[in-house]
Length: 582
Image (cartoon, rainbow, N blue to C red; front, side):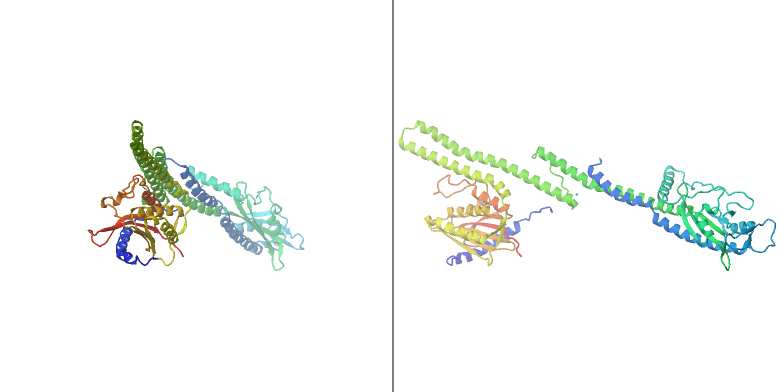
């Protein structure tokens, strides 16, 4: 640090602070979007995904086997209990062991047991009909010890057989209802396929039914079997025993269909299918709406992007969908930002080409005129001046071509460069030390001041930032008078590192302060040779700083606070965002 310039720093600190606060108000943060009619493919995919998930649930409706099995088990237990109770009632009422019997009652043999008893067949039929109050849903059969059928609720006392005719469900006449009935039957056949087949034999005996045979041996058993059409039937058998020795004198077989259970299951299926159909419709509509809300704007963006690829200048702007506040809106913002950037770069390239053409024509025209004149001039002194002019024009074109090449490569180098944390204080200290030795020919002093206790880090490309600082320092040195001073200040802002580069030159013309960063604009001191500067240095520095998220401005230093104060030099203010450090 240099103490002999502390007074100058104090005099100009208020101006720098006011200038920095003005820049802070003017800098606007750039908004970056954060890092989803005809049936489109996206619509079909959304429909397929949503409807497939719902279809799996709908398919499960037809397979309510757990619910159906629970109802059958409960009914089978009840049927077994009724069979046991009915068997006890028959044993008490229809079996007699005395010999004073009517002629129509024949004695029965107990089989392996050594006693004789008599069964009243007519009374057995009457009791079974009274006990089985629903002969259509239930059927009771009484087998004697030899397995012969002696009573059956399907055959009333008059001998007429009860005919069972399955009627169609009421109201089920439409195609959809018929399809539902057929679907239920198909499902029931599939679910009951593993059940044993129930066969109704013409001259049936107890041996035709495993449950009845077990009952004649003293065991109570039950089972679930199926008909040919897929419906189920429940069977429960119980032995008819004489007390107190429990002599088996017959078997009672109770059977019950599951029509009411199937009806309940089908009713549940119907209700769930109806709800599923409504959910299916709502899902389809929501899927179509969701797909349209995604696919339609994406199609619009894609169509606009396609027009942009054909003609960027004449193509309409990308649709503004930022009001959606979702990823589509973010995509719209990104595409609009990209398109505008491309338009700006194309326009910049066009302007750059026009400016380059204009700037190159001047030295070329001058060189052409000097060359034409040189052939017609014989005076040695004049010829030497023309040759000197040609050399100046060639030097100017060489400088222009070099700077133009640098400017044209700038965007590509910034895009390819890898941003790294850079210690700005160390960079400026090194550059000031280097420039301090190269500026000795004019005895110009370069002094550096910093307010940072800890070195500030910025994220950037070191070579490019160094080039920007070199351009600003070269400009300040070129305008400084002999034995003058160039002061470099590094101040701390809220989230920016502020660099002030001040010289003691004539300052900037008031009407040219905003133009100093324009391409090829140059306004040099009168004593400096024409053509030594291309007017691209400050423009390149501005591009580099803005590419790093910063800002740069030019102003004049004044000895006083008022507008009419004398200008004491030029000031360039550069701001770079500080890298967040934990």
